[in-house]
Every structure is written in C-alpha cells, then in structure tokens.
Length: 294
Image 1: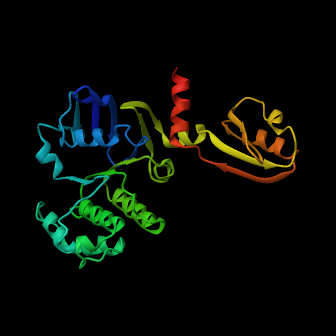
Image 2: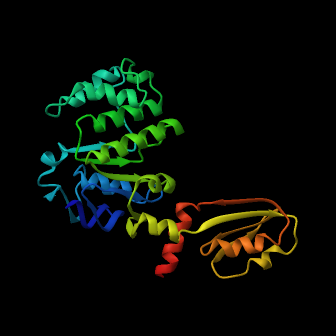
Image 3: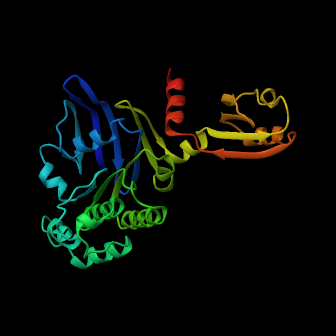
C-alpha cells in the first residue's frame, strides 16, 4: 500500500517557482529519503503535502485520501517535525508537550517521559532557556508522542550533536520497526544512507531521480585526494571513471566512479604522503545526474 502518493505536484509563489511536476510515492513501512540542497523545494513539497499551503496544480494523497479534502483527518495520524521549531517562550517543556498531546485522542503520558528520556530532554525547563538543539528535541518528542502512522521529518538533525543524532536515529528505527512509515528530508547524504531504502533527489524544484539507496551507494562517485612526493602523477590517473581532476599544492584530487582496484594499482607505484577517500557533496552528485540526463 502506498502511504504517500504525489502526482505532478506544482507550487508557484506568484511568478516564482516553488516546486514543479514533483511525483513520487512512499510504501507502507518504508523509510524514504528526500534529499536536495537548501532551497531545492523539499520544505515546499512537505508543506503542500500536509496542506499547510495549497498547490498550484497536481495532487497528493496520504493513506489513500486527498491531502486537501481530508487534511484534518489525515493529520491526526501524522507526526511532523519542521526544519525550524517555535514555541511559547515562557512555557515549560512539559506544558508544551501536554498541550500538544491534548490535540490527539488517548495519548499515553508515560510515552512523553520515555521519549524525553531517550533524547535527554529536561521537561521542567522553560522554552526560553533551551538551546536551539534542545528546542529541536522538543519538536522530536512532540512529533512522536501520539504514535503516528506516518512520520515526516524536515532536516531533523540540525542543531543536534553527534551523540544526540545517533539517539535520534535509533528512535526513528524503533518507530519504523513498530510499523511507522517515515519520510526523511535532508541535505546530508550520509544521514539518508544510514536509514533509508529509497531516495528521491530534488533540485531546483524538480525531481532528478528516484533510486534505491543501495544502487545509489554503488553508483556514487567518490572524491579521492592524494598527497604524494612523486612527480607527474596527474598523467597516471588519466583513465575512464575519473572526472574533475585538479592539482593541489601537495598532489591531486578527483572524482572517481569505477573499480577501486584500478586506483589501488596506480597508488602502489607512488610515494604517498596521504590519501583521503570521501563522499562527494550532494551538489556534485546532482551535477553528474544532470550531465547523464543531458
């Protein structure tokens, strides 16, 4: 069953493009990634999906129901964490969460305590005394307290330190094991790769690709940085699969897609000072998708 189905969703703000012709679907029980750089249209898509704003054209359904016609009914079973959270500054955390719980039926108040403990959140502090990261924790607990069937996360880890990020990932995986479907929006590819089975890539308001995350891992370019005392090393790496090769003060760097053993063979002939292999930025991946489609 498709929990989310988006068909040619388009939103313009006057003459300015928000999103254009966005189409993808999310299966029940899936953790689906939605990735793109800031300003690509992720938040606009989500807000339109939640009928917080209305589309210019196209359609979207959640649980098989039209998002605009049945918006109030649908939202009862959705947990939503926006990219930025704002609360009444003079309220205590526990009062904010109890107020949020009052909008839903049969919320187990012990769940608030359990989620807060998992995220190391002090329930007795006032909102005005919280850091940005701790306010984000309030948003996480708020989004999960009613045990939603669908969890929509928009840049959920911004403001969280690495330890809290891992605790958050564990929490989301636990909810998924209990049956929740998750739409995970981020501009950080490594986060999406940790959690998701499939991913939709959006750039400049349009979907570039919907792909299985394992295939994406296998097909993604790696950035390789080589520091070497050997001379003329650029010429040694002039073969298929290498792009964006540039010289640096200590050596070279390039993007590579192919059999890593070919690189190792060349490295064996060099006097190395250092080598770094890392994921390229999302922008670099997007550029290769665009070049491939062109």
